[in-house]
Every structure is written in structure tokens, then in C-alpha cells.
Image (cartoon, rainbow, N blue to C red; front, side):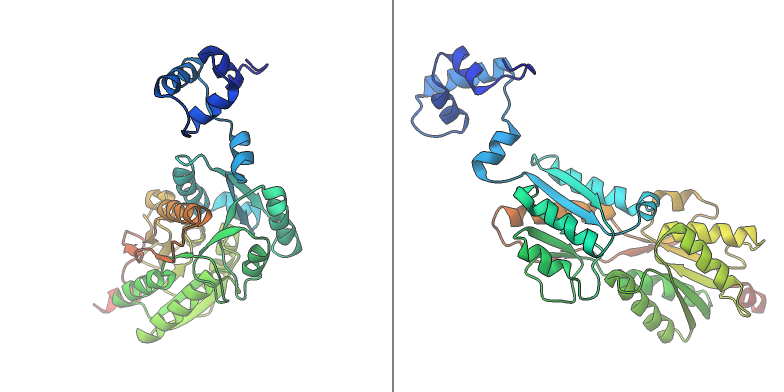
Length: 345
């Protein structure tokens, strides 16, 4: 036995009374081992509690059995946004049954981020990566291709890409929110959006503008960094306007909950004085008062599909792009007809 108490192939060989080479052949199901000898070796391995060494397996097949995610956002935003733990849980759902390890890194977009990817590729520390938060003209596509890593993108990039994508129509959820609010009679609707240059934030913003125009509503957009603090700042700005909106569509639930707090501290009653919608339908949004109307997505399912697609790519297959179901709108108590419309009825 090794000093750490883990049985080795040598231990199995001694127990079974055969050579280490024959044990290796039997455990890897290779030909040339008599059935009774194979059975004896497998029984010895079982009795000793032997399990394959991931390090040895990695060396034998030239793989790291690890995949990476590099998140180019502030750690504070990541810590506060429930999307990330849900997505990562989905990734682990797939990795846990495949013997794969997730390597997670946080890096500032730009040079630090590039160095992080190069570090992960060095000495094959990871076999592939999941590229999230795609940006306009995203340079990571070419970088990861240059590094020879397998990859899958969350969303479709706006540059040529050799990698499969896993996409969901973010715009569909925003359209549903605007149509819902317009149907209630709202005509001054604001959107607290994500950062400029981030593709899914831009898709949501474009969908908001188009849906507001189709409904004949006045639209106002304020950009943020997706954090709750910036969502609160944007809400203060909107409510300070000479004609504040009667409804606000937020680009995630964290900002919507922060906006709800801002409105209530000002003495506004939600939804009588202000209707609010979120995005991602996180658990906390269902338990605040009033419960949050939100675009329901499946972050955990998205993570699982992305991980399985990446594993297929690493294995040498060509899985192709995957399109997830469109999100739906979960209507709850944070939206209602605006007070001015209700007074007219």
C-alpha cells in the first residue's frame, strides 16, 4: 500500500499473484487475459478498494480531465447574482458523472483574462472551456482557437467561430415582459439594462426597444454593470425624472429586487405606483413582497447542456449548435395596471 493508504496496481498484482502488466491489461479490458485470471484480478481490486488514478489516466490518454470557465466580471457581481451558482450547479451535474473537474477563474477582461486562458492551456491544464458573457467582436474566440482548446459558447458570437453554441432567445423574455406591461396599460416603460458591448445585454436592449415601439410606449434605457448596487442607482435616476416611468423592466432579478427596495423606501407602493419585472426568476424574487414578476429561465439546465456539449466536443464528435426553449414570463404580484389607468376605469 502507498503511504497515503491508497492501493496501487502493484498491490492488486500481489493479491492476485500476477504481474503488474497483466493487472493493467485486465483493468483496462484489453485482450490476452484468461477469463479466470481476469476474474481473480477484478476480485482482488474490489477487495482492496482499488480505483483508477486520475493522474495516471490523464497521462495515459493525454487529457487533463478538467474544463475551465473564466468569468470576466467583478467578484462582487458574481457573488450577488444567483445565476452563476445555478449555472455552475448544472455544469457539475454533467461533470460529476464523467470524472471531469471544473476549474473556475475570475479575471478582468483584457490582458489579465488573456493570460488566464493561456495559463489554463499551458501543459494542458484543461481540455476545454465554456465561454460565457460573449462580447461584441469577442477576441476570446480566436484566442481559444489559437490555444488549441475545445470550447462551447453561451450564445451565438457575432464573429466567425469554430465552436458549437448553446443559445436561448434573451429577447423573447424581454418582449414578453413589455407586452405584459403594455397590456396592463403602461405607456412609460423603462429598461435597466446590462453593460454596453455584452451581447446578451444588447439583445435584450434591442428587444425592449422594438417591443416598446410596437406597443406605442415611451421607452427609456439605463445601462448598468448587472450589479444590485448599479440597479439601485439606475432606479434612483429613473424615479428622479420629471415624468418617471410607471413600469421598469430589469435585466436580472438582483437589480429588480434592489429597485423594489428603492421604490419602497421612497414611499411608493408596488405595483400600484410602479410595476417591476425581473429576469431569471430566481428563488429570492418569489419570496420578496410583492413577489416578483420575472422572465423564467433555466440556468441550471443551461449549464448542464453546455457541459455535455463541451464533453462531446472534447471526445471528438461534432455536436453542433443547441437551441434551448424560449423563456417564459412568470407573472406575480409586482405588476399591475398603472394608477393613472386604474383611475380612468
